[in-house]
Length: 320
Image 1 (cartoon, rainbow, N blue to C red):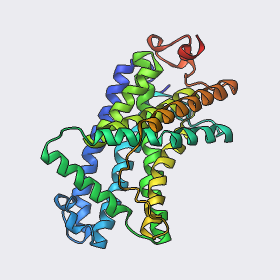
Image 2: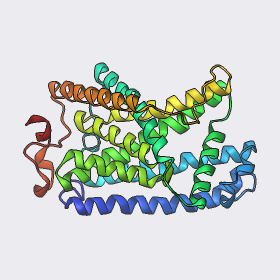
Image 3: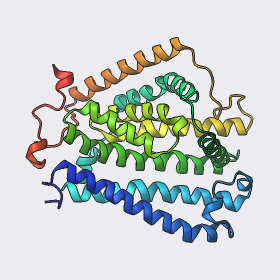
Image 4: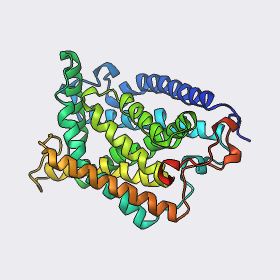
């Protein structure tokens, strides 16, 4: 039996965040030690200096630091936590099932069809009143993202897809959906409430206030896909599509193959946002139906959970 398997979900949640904090400190120490070496003498205090983004070695060091952050602060804590809380980690994380092609298509379409709504949320979020210092930090983060995406070579595209799409998709989904959302669901005993809470935490931890709402929406959609299907691979695929699409569009723009600049927000008419909401909702409902027909469920085997967290029907909101 896993050490924390019979502990209350509150203790499990505290353990997960405790591991996250420990690994965050570890990341900070490792970065402080390694960054000057791999960047050519620059310090971590200079990581946010836009004037250095054109220095190739400095930019490479930022990419390595980004990779280290994603793996250290999200993937490793979640994997260790899962091993402590459940005797079959792959089942707990929702990674034990294969991917059914039609379900995968539905998950990807959900993310694609939600893009107009995400754009509208981003446009609205950008109007929020924030301090000058916070807006400057947001602008600096945007400049760093543009620098990371810069380049028109095929090698750059492949590496950026790995760094900015694949690794975050796996690490963040394992942490926020596979581990965090699972524990929160046991606490609040309502899958949809847990999905919203996990999405709020997902957006908050990224520390980008002017991108809070679109990231919250994306987190909710990814969490909803996991909740209705019980298959984390579908959420990982949706996350990869969302990040990878921007990487590819920026690459094509940099290579002058398209004129659309994905780093700039376009105006989204309200009717498009409404249609986007309806279509994404219908696709999510269809995904649930297909998962249910296949006998898939978000719930863990009841006998392996603490008694106070067991539920007769975790999908009762659908089945009523």
